[in-house]
Length: 270
Ligand SMILES: [Fe+2]
Ligand SMILES: [Fe+2]
Image (tube, rainbow, N blue to C red):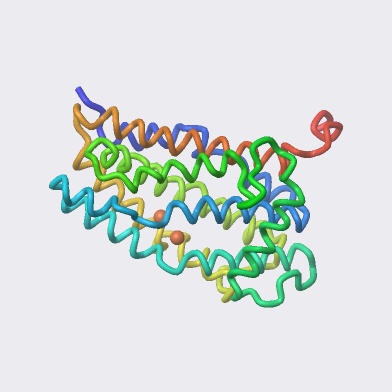
């Protein structure tokens, strides 16, 4: 008897990635401007890897899963233009954190992204496995690698990719985007509002009519129709690769830049 889609959804909900406290820590104890920049450098690079469909939609169609292919294609198309908007929001928050214009042109994606990398180099370059060229932590590279399978078209990779897609969309909709909203808007630290033009990224992604809500629905529908005795193991594998690698990334960012990286005496008295 195979697991049902509800079981699978519950499995994702009970993974520690789903309730990781990284954004609560960000909200409760605002990091220094350089740490904000470093956080965004790693987060935006992770997000970058999740957007392109690669050969995944066409591989689904090739394996006679055309309805699922259409659902995934819809997600991929709605991700267009999100990279520049994320850079703008990141630069805006760094400026607010610093109380001055660290970035004078928030719509110059390249220069904002280069500036974020500099902050990352400054704070994280000493960690084992840090790649000086890209400024990526080993954990960020591993989390990105969960999406390498989208370049493969064989059936096993394609089924595994469905699991990864489901976990990604559930995390985006329930942990990452709400977490960013809590830390960047609701906490009041940055005096930023969802209606600020520079925050458009978050406005578009958040809430009942946000992009992520629709993505989650699509992913649940696509996985639900493919889940059976034969596909279950591969789907679960795809889910776990994603959740385990992202949880490890959240752990290191939390430890290096956020509350769990507080001075030892504070942790002891906390
Ligand atoms: Fe997006
Ligand atoms: Fe999404």
